[in-house]
Length: 426
Ligand code: B12
Ligand code: SF4
Image 1 (tube, rainbow, N blue to C red):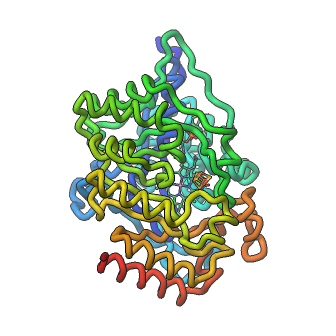
Image 2 (cartoon, rainbow, N blue to C red):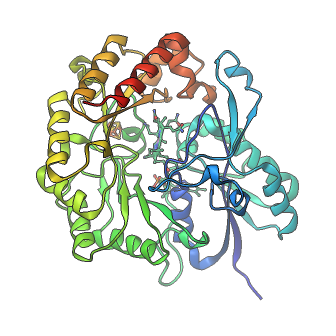
């Protein structure tokens, strides 16, 4: 007789113009599930899992050396709000029928947890909620993650039973397990870690300062436990989801990296969520390279001082250039270093993008244009109210907003330029 609750964790499909498996894992949901692991039986259905048997005869979706890859996708009609955007709209992830079959052939769980991330991906969350309500009508649905925190009222409208806000699920049960529930995946190769919460900066386009009060870090021992668990499961690539991974480095990242080096742990680390280049000193750079960081994504956004000053001063061009030099001196390959530059910010003069791209190119590293996504509640989201209806989360789409602001031709021209520059790095 089992009196434990049964919980199905679901990572929904993505409805968007583009999506790429850039180390996307439902880390928030797995972390909270880990806290109550002793009092429930868990299963997972991950629409974004490219190791699912559905992909077995589709080699084009295989991972690259670092664990990234394309998702299966189908073109679908654009929702009305996005009708004017001249791009195909798609549904990314496992076909809906596989989930329907899963729901039909399995005993209904007591709860379904649904991971949310981008606000403009809510059509995927809605698809999951509708399917669960149809086949498992008595099951309670819990929606959690960034979308529910950024757009709580909209999240209420999707029909879930509980919306998980910024409260924490307390760890329960004797010896409660604190590790994210990665063991639910079979043959896990790629995972994510987040060892800090919050950020010391207050960039006007970012929601992190609004969602997190200050900066905290997990005890190093806990971060090491998480790492050891991932290694035990056979993970080869780990992406950090931290917003300020290098802040207070003497207490947080440096001891962690020393442990990795001293114990000769053989894993590749990645930083898709951007590192703050200002914090990169000789010691951190050396430790990161030795510990196995294979890709360095640095948040730069723009070379223009005025832009930086107005949006939070997180980095200036001389600091950025120094960080690139420091990483290269420590042994990082130049082609493993990428600068994120923002495209489509409401106060961004187009010449600055060009000049910023040229500057990054002159340092010999790659440029990645990060299309601007306006976020409600942020100062810059407020500025966007005059261009789009911010109450409709689809209008936060990173593809749509720059096109609405600057027009398709201009955006295409800049993207072409970026591709050319990346081909001819100095
Ligand atoms: C990691 C990350 C990414 C990853 C992808 C993550 C993923 N799984 O898909 C990468 C680097 C690829 C990425 C890309 C982008 N991102 Co991003 N990203 C984040 C980040 C740092 C964390 C998201 C996450 O996974 N959180 C979940 C966990 C890890 O967070 P947590 O706080 O520990 O969670 C706790 C609770 O929330 C709870 N919880 C979380 N989930 C759940 C689920 C359930 C069911 C329950 C019960 C509880 C629960 O449990 C945790 C412990 O208590 C957030 C900022 C942030 N700090 O939240 C931005 C954020 C979501 N990203 C943002 C942006 C702007 C982008 C980009 C558009 C940037 C760009 N211009 O390219 C791109 C978009 C990519 C795309 N294809 O459209 C914005 C949101 C924009 C929006 N409109 O929604 C955010 C909020 C940052 C910001 N700038 O303000 N991102
Ligand atoms: S440094 Fe990054 S995480 Fe911190 S407030 Fe600025 S954009 Fe957000």
